[in-house]
Length: 128
Image (tube, rainbow, N blue to C red; front, side, top):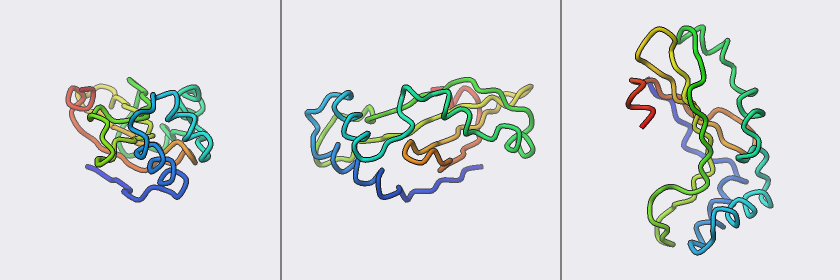
């Protein structure tokens, strides 16, 4: 099962464009640019992001869930190149489906803290 909203909000789109225009920036500089564009849930706001995840409601569909990993990405691992969109600005939260080998990957955009994607799969595949 997979659901993805591939339409970033205006603030996220503008922040990504600014970061992509500056491949020489460090992650610290890119994060500062995103904050100027309205980033509310950056890497220092992990607990606030986790508080936004409706685990009880998601458990209705996927069974009991337990958070296994939470990761914020500023830029992708792809080589920084002005011709390639490398700005990510996303939260990736992996929740284990308790008692199974499955997990749910939850994508959260960091400007409004909205869930923009869900992907269910094998735990080992999602943790790579």
